[in-house]
Length: 233
Length: 233
DNA sequence: GAGTGGTCTAGACCACTTT
DNA sequence: AAGTGGTCTAGACCACTCC
Image (cartoon, rainbow over all chains, first blue to last red):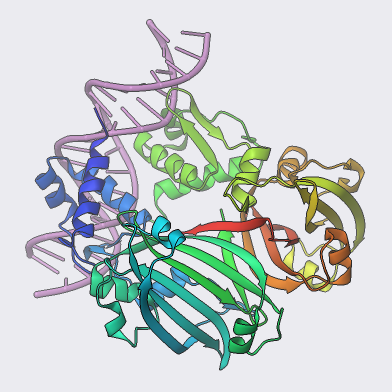
């Protein structure tokens, strides 16, 4: 046997989700129906669906059925935005400035982004926590993958919801590298901090359901009133 | 039904691992034997064991059996030490200084640590990457939970392996909060950086298989040659 | 009431490891 | 050769959701 049947089922379902046959929010066929269609037993279809639920791609509820995960502002925040206030409550810094422009891709961007795009959109945003500017965020995406993105301003608070709704690009993962950096003159002015203030820099590569790097993002956060929280297990 | 049978099996196995009936490295009974002993089918025992494998508490191999996960320096590093060099390779900063002392617990430590200990051990360590001091690390553990820890210096590079071997405390999880801070005079001197250099501060609560907070740790890392890498998914 | 996923069982065969 | 986990099937009953 080349690969287990449930693997084949998983790949089939992922493919259908990725190509929009079953868009986010869609109700999948039942275990029995899916198994019958693909020529496997209900138990094997079940195993595949449970694996997909573990990966966060679908959600299952007894009596209701299996639904393709719909990225909402809340779920996107919960999964991909790990900043918390010092008391542990979810921080939801509001957008206070935004600029989108199209430009030629830099070398590193071409190398990192899917499709090695010649042109990219750069989205520059500033966020404030409780009225105080606290995050400077630069996102870079392929202009080929996101046609017309610059014409859609103002963009919603959470970009990943927009990627899904407007471009059928389903973000499932982000790889991040964190460092501490000193505020340069530009950032210090934007955030209203002193020059040289320690800031948390987060370099992110955003990966969609097909495994493509669809976004490169750099966030610089003031951590005087927030921390970046994660669980290792 | 109060709780599913496989849940009961999971709890039974976790309990036996936690109490040392099956210590790390031990070979568990086969699915069939375990099911027979606990009065469930082989399939139900299997489901429990697979869940435990997903949690990282056991490892299964075809033909070999199911083994309680043994924390090795490598696995501990991989799971709980996320620093990488800028090129992405695993950084393994070597220990260059260590001090262990016993003292009264501070208020926050009593509140956070399991058992609200009156006395704690504080382990202060300095690590160097490629010969250059880069991490200052302070671990605090209950003196009741880790009797005689101060007499065991020098401690091994990875504390979690020692917790497991000497105290049967099995670390399975760590909750972390990250911030950027400025180097104070003390740390700056220790790490050979300028005063005010941005450093990555990691506050960690270490949790064992029984869900107890067994360690409170604060690491301060120079991120000029390392980054802290994680995946969100 | 019909349909869904959630739990549980029993049995079959295969691939792998160890002796 | 014996024993293990890995895959797959078929069928049963329960709990939940929706009409």
